[in-house]
Amino acid sequence: MTDVLVDVRGVKVHFPIKRGVIFDKTVGHVYAVDGVNLQILKGETYGLVGESGCGKSTLGKAILNLETPTEGSVEFDGTDIAALKGKELRRKRQDIQMVFQDPMSSLDPRQSVESLLTEGMKAHGLADDKEATRKRLRELLSAVGLPPSALSKYPHEFSGGQRQRIGIARALSVNPKLIVADEPVSALDVSVQAQVLNLLEELQDEFELTYLVVAHDLAVVRHISDRIGVMYLGGLVEESEAGELYETPLHPYTRALMSAVPVPDPAVEDQREQILLMGDLPSPSKPPTGCRFHTRCPWRQETRCDDERPELRVVEIDGVTPGHRVACHWAEQIAAGEVERHEVTATMTEQSGPDEVDDGPPQYFVDPL
Ligand SMILES: Nc1ncnc2c1ncn2[C@@H]1O[C@H](COP(=O)(O)OP(=O)(O)O)[C@@H](O)[C@H]1O
Ligand code: SF4
Ligand SMILES: [Mg+2]
Image (tube, rainbow, N blue to C red; front, top):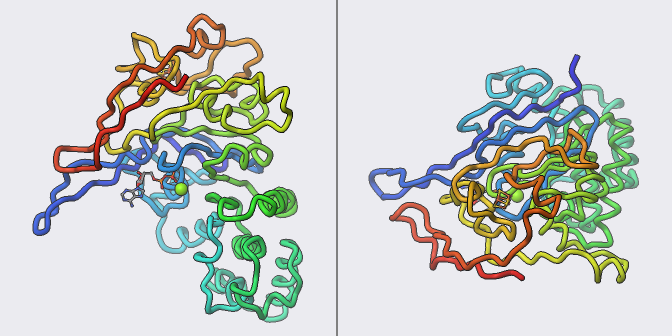
């Protein structure tokens, strides 16, 4: 028996960049996901955060078997999902459901809520008995806090938050084990975001669900997650139990992300570390060598940072538990204050991919202090 539901091992998803009208010439690759190891435990909520474009959705798709990894494997409940076909694949598809960012575009506007909710059930043979189906629909609506009258309505008749409730009911309709929620509240008003996150939390126990919640915003994953993985340019740079990540962020990138989350207490707000990252994320078609964060890192060192890619590893630091892993060569020294924060030297990072690809002018990263 294992309590691991999803086991992602060495997953890479590289997209070829093609050029040419007649001959499809591959001129480079987008290294969207570039070597990720992570486990999602049964019953937990794993939060995955990182800037837009760092590969979160692509990793989510690899877990959903919607994107085939270039390398590595994804096991779901002990089975390699890439090897599944036919009936077994359909069965796994039922076990893993998705909640999307924008419920308006993920719900067909021409279908009533009843039809939207029964579609998946029908596909998986769960809607054969009319009476049982009707009962199930009422249960689903009540679980997500919508009245039975919602069944005959259409998506445009609901608010954004209500539409996301329909999206969640739809995911729940086929009794999944895992729900991958990709930016589930990013399109919603801030006042509604907490309600939808609370709902997801309530449903977790009731339906024995495991969640992967993907968001670019640390504030969103903060309360809902048991563990959090921080992604930067296709790789995990830190992973920890949620509370510990906020108490003791170890990776310079995580510290920068944390410093951007506002704190309501002005006294705390005044004292806390401010790290402003300059420049955009380098292009994933030409990621920096060594530590991918070195072009923006205020703790970058002369040795190792530029040419040696750090592994996600357990560190021995006071107050840091073994489940807390970080991909930084200097994590211990930074935590001990032996390696100090310094100005980021202006570096020119080539943004373009291979010669033929022009992504615009090069970006300059300047001193963030
Ligand atoms: N199908 C695809 N073909 C080519 N590039 C893609 C494809 N899907 C995503 N990408 C690229 O991969 C990178 C990661 O994208 P994505 O996983 O959507 O990031 P995130 O969800 O973190 O914003 C981006 O540079 C994106 O443009
Ligand atoms: S390895 Fe070097 S560049 Fe990377 S995060 Fe650590 S100190 Fe910064
Ligand atoms: Mg995304």
